[in-house]
Length: 468
Image 1 (cartoon, rainbow, N blue to C red):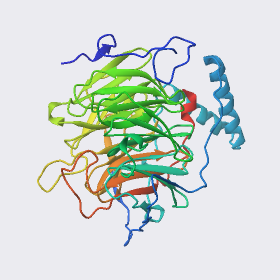
Image 2: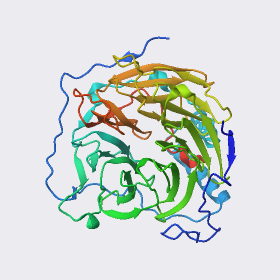
Image 3: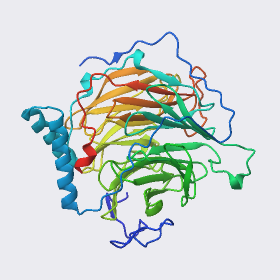
Image 4: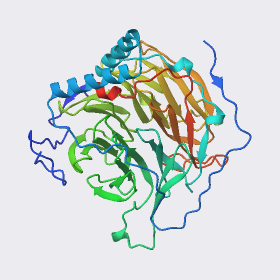
C-alpha cells in the first residue's frame, strides 16, 4: 500500500527555476424524484462540410479574445487589483448591496476552494438549443470551448482539428493531415489526436495525441506555432489552470508534465503513476489531479510544495478512467466498473460511491464512465458513457451522496464534456467508439460534436479564477 502523502524527493523530477530568471524555450532551468427526461428531435440536423483543401482551411471572423501584455506585480498588488476589478464589475451591474455582498462571499469561498453553490436542481436542457456538427469521419475524442464561449474546437481519431463558431454554426477552420506532404515537413499530428485545450486568454490552442507531441496553434488563424516535446508515449489529456498560461499534460508514459505556454517551455515533470495516465484536471491553485488508469490510483500534485497525495481505488474498480475537480478540496472520478466516486483531499477513501451510474450492457457488465465535467464551485456534475444519456448529478453539500437530477439523450460514446460558465454552453465530443480503443462500436451513433445549453442556472461567477 503506497503512502497517502509523498514528498517529491524520489518520485518527482523538477524543472524548478531560480526566481527572476526567465524560462528558455527549451524548458531548461534558466527561470426525491427520478431524473427528468428531455424530448428528442425527430431528425438530427446534419452539418456536412466538404473539405478538399490542404492542411488548414480558415474563414475570417474569429478574433483573438485577449492580447493584453502581462503585468508584473507582487502578490499584494495583484490581490488589490483583482479585488478592485471585482467590486467595479459588480457595481456596474447595478446590483444592490445585498447582492454585491452575496457575490463577494461566493468569491471569498471560491478563493479558498470551499464554495459549493447549489444549482443542480434548476438545470434543464432543451432540444431546440441543440446544435450538431458531423465534420469528423471517425470518433470525436475531445472537445474544448473558448473562454468567451463563442468558439469550440474538436479533435478526432482521424487526426483532424476543427474549429466552430457556436452561434452561427459555421465551421471556421480545419487542420488535417496531408499525406502528400513528407512526414518530416508536416506540421500536423501523425496519428489520432486524444486531447485539446484552449488557453484562458484565448490566444492558443494546444493538441496532443499518439505521436507524443504537444502542438501549439494560433487560436485565431489555426497557424502552427510550436511543437513541445518531452513525453515518450501517447498524450491522453490536457488542462490549463484557470487564468494561467500553465498547462498540465498526461501521457501513457506514466508521467504528468507542466508547461508554460506563454514561454513555450517545459517547467516540471511529475512521476509516480504505475501505469499510463489517462486524465488530468486543475482549477486555480498550483496543483493538478491525475487519473492513473489501470494503476487504480488518483494523485494530487502540489507543484510549489513538490509533493503529492495518493488516493487508491478499490481493486474492483478495474481502472480509473476520468477525473474532474468540484473545488480545490474535492474531486470526482469515474471508473471502468461504472462507478462515480466523490473524494476529499483529507481522506484516503471516497466520501461516497455511486455504482453502475450509467447502467449495464446487455451482457450484465457495467458501462464504463468515459467522461466527467463539473461546473466548478457548485454541486453540478455531468457524466458521459455509452448508454445514450448525458447524466446530470447533484453532489450533496457534505459530499457524502450524489443523486441524478436530469438526463439528456445522446447516442454513442460521450468521450468528452466541456462547459463554459460565461454562456452556460456544454460541448460534447461523441463517437461510435470509445476514445481510447475499438472494443465496442455503436453503429446507431454518429461521430459528432453536440452543443447544448444548460437552462435554469442562476448567475454563475465567470471570473472565479480571479479570486485565487
